Length: 307
Image (cartoon, rainbow, N blue to C red):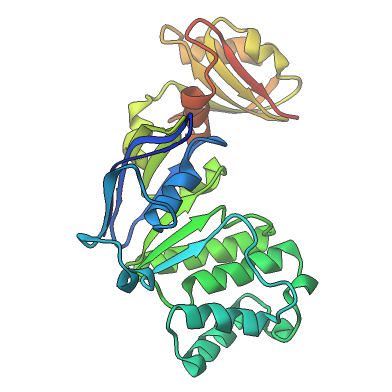
């Protein structure tokens, strides 16, 4: 389907993308992950042929990019790209025409999608009258209305409330089962962990981790504890038996030192707080992300405290 092979892009003195490769097949969701400035947006723009790579190759079903391929792709940018004074329906129909859709068919599909996103009663309102979340829905509709084979979504859950996040998740799974190839760029590690089949994590322009989600988590071992408790968990970062502590209000994800005994760690923790749950598990994608792009160094203990 889509194959990105050893692409490179430099702007003046900044090497934005350095030897990045990724592949996504039909019926797969690839999570394109990385911190701000990692090179994700530049990679997406090269895939879409908005900018050309300095080196490397990008093919779609074995073919180099041309205008016949453009209409097989759908793109949801992170930034708003809507005409604020135009009505919802006219905006959707305009973008559909750019993809070569016949007007009546585009209108039929637009009404179906507006109904599904509970926007049908807003079809004649100007875009600027909509909330941020509803504008995001319109942009998503535009990106998939022409039934593209490849869908590239940059922070698709931005601005959506929990109910609409569930709806969008369901639609993404439908697209996957329809054999669409999906690239999902996000900072939300929990969403990526639940939705993606494969991952490509970029940091400072280079791929630092890729592969199937299950294989990636297995690679990082099983010395992780998911802890639920009542009390003050700030002491967790001081325990010698714990290498890394990601501490939240009444939850913590702990990565144990290699020599640590889970039962000993549990006894030690139980002396300080009321333990509700102590479960050995694989590390979360969020913990792996922090270890790879936010680790202060091998001799320092990493701690994240969120209240």
